[in-house]
Length: 201
Image (spheres, rainbow, N blue to C red):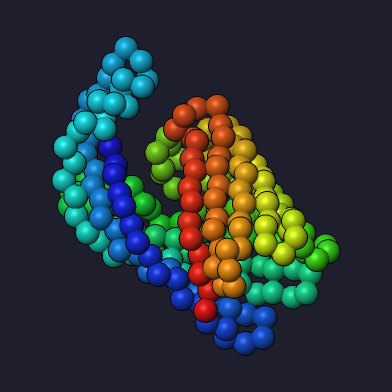
């Protein structure tokens, strides 16, 4: 069982025309525990897991990234969970957030339309087994304040189940956006969703 909450700060810096580097610094409080849980249904098993008492600790981690851009193309690389934080203090327990490297390519065939793909450069042991994910998708602007996007992702290693995702961004005011996304898959553990408030300066 792994539980975590986090807060982060992202800083971007233009190094030269067409090249931007950035980092997201994150303060996380979480914990993990190993125990046998069960029940007559999968929902009962998850309820038993949620009832476990998990000792938490606060750790610091960061992601670093770089993106090169031209009028019709963008290429980026990101290193996530650079410190591979340990929440358990037990050297025999692997980090639930292993270090990951990912590269992506985006094409902009016309104003307001973006087509993209990205792939993990390494294989990591995430919940559910080894994963090396690949994704494709697109985004289009619906006016000056709203954009929508969708895509597919799957793993090149381990379980290869497809996950479909949809998302949207709403410009609330200048330099302030509300983002939301949802991922749908056959199994509950592969489903996800989130809402974020994004500000630019």
